[in-house]
Image (tube, rainbow, N blue to C red; front, top):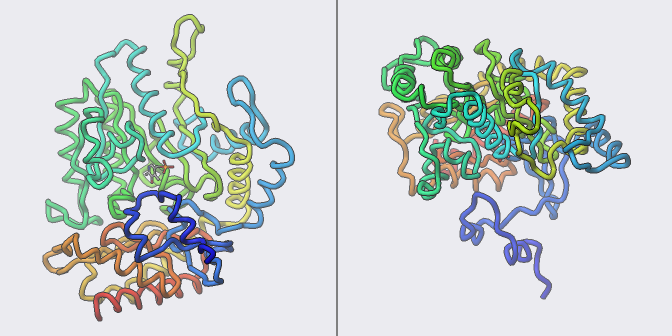
Length: 449
Ligand SMILES: *Cc1c(COP(=O)(O)O)cnc(C)c1O
């Protein structure tokens, strides 16, 4: 008997972020092609990709304009060494990024994935102080529940036990500041009417460790992997001021939030602040190709600029840095943003979606909170909304609903018991309505009415 694609896959492939034994009951869905929000498997079954294939797909699968941009570049140049060499797509992309990134940002260091952009940012901040006369500044601060990628440095500034705990002995000794937790606010406040009382945790940490800290890293407004935890812009504003007070560089990880995901091009705009270093990836190429950029202020760049013999250069590289195909995809994405009012339409649809989500899920007995920013809408499921008591982890409620939703044709891959929509920005209301119906059905099947 001939083996199926699923069998051939499981024979050889170790999938990311998976307990492979789970694939015994949920074999991989082998996708043949995609179009817009839809993925089609080899049997012709279609799935609505409401999670944007790991938050990367920004403007639909096989978007005609992005496809054309890549195809055009493909016949000119596929890759070139990026040390000493350059190419038009990278130059134009840097110019366009310079237009849309916050005011302080002026220089663009290309890498090839999100974790690499974070590693790069940490090394830059460290080196900045090592050669800037403050060698005591060698530590990093970060928020609990944060996520910045899976490589050792990036894991060290993340604090999700699920990904990081086991590797503790391999990691840097960073300072983890208790993050805002607006759903279960320890100060009894709500997101709309607080003064970020929880910021006292950051103030205490800076008072104790600011002098030995090179940089503070955070995901602005949205801690994605933590379960789409959303906190107010005021927190970021305060963080910027605190970093200035203690001469600590502020690194914002906009890898998930960038390119319109939170309603503005970058989340930090909503707080009216500029980071010293900003990491971007995921949506930059529309989710087509691995690419990231570590964007930095002139101040940081200048501190590395000297005669070669002084040894101040940033000796960091990735083979595929500045890949022309990735740059061509990113340029096509930017063109779509400029010509098609993507943010405006997504903004209006987001408002509409908030009301629809409330109608569909707001009254369910296990919905603790529906939170949203931009088109991202997350539903935190709990055992008891009164006490906010979560379900026992072993029940894997979110996973059960995910499997059910797949049967209906919806990709609703959850974060624990947090179900979320993070669709491409050009999704239509009709498609969102379908997603709501399928999610609702899957939820009722597993949890009851
Ligand atoms: C996805 C993500 C990363 C890691 O990016 P990879 O390309 O997966 O290495 C880092 N930070 C945030 C906020 C992310 O969402």
